[in-house]
Image (cartoon, rainbow, N blue to C red; front, side):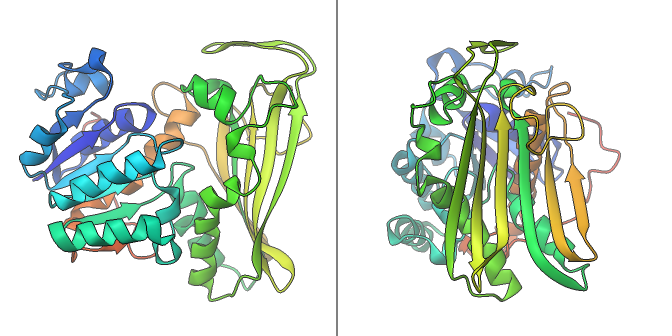
Length: 359
């Protein structure tokens, strides 16, 4: 079995522990944490498994990498610390590990990534013999392999639209919700994630990835942005109140323009409460969903709802994104060392998992 380290135990890391434990080809070999309160806690406890795995969390990075893990799931955030995340990931690759992560947006489309991200990763691969596969938590498969698969079912394709529609009150990361995205802030507040060019920085690589797979040339990538204020003050279960008049919903698109028209579109519709912007796209029910729409002949629409950690669809989206990454580890271990993207790494059936006891 492939000894696998989970680095970070937040929203993504919790799901990663469960995914590694459930995978028949992997075993948990270490858990790295930043929070001193988590040091010494068992991996099973941190992953919400309800039983111990006999692996205690540590903040000693050198000691963990010195054991020579076969793989590292890098689950620490790269949203506001991309340089630090890249340094951590390079460190793990130099130790010879296969690394899978959602943390480095720039490497979703690794062939066209900026050299300041691509070159250090390639140098570490050459030195250490490890590999790197980056895919998103939005989730990645919803903006690459799923729309591309479905596009092949059509006679003609006019537009590919990938949607994430979510109630952010279920997202267990208050600083990101309030400050990075701006929910509950005055409408004049400028959230970092919504600033011009930032959506393209995050999701543009996936647009380019789909264009490459479809064999089309992009004229450019454009952004659209809309924000709505709350009509009334609302109370959330995990983050308290969001006042009337503050930002309550966001809708933006990252558009791949082909021959002057938006043909490949990644759209996000997020709310802090269902009452805000009810005229915008909504999920079939509950907290949220991911949807792919192929406008063409025939018109094809696929909506996916995933739940985890109870009935939490935000956690379910994280879990499926993690499943894609963790499920690639054994394939990457068998492949040559290298820098991989979603078009390189196959999405495979759940071999060895059918009927396996839930972790």
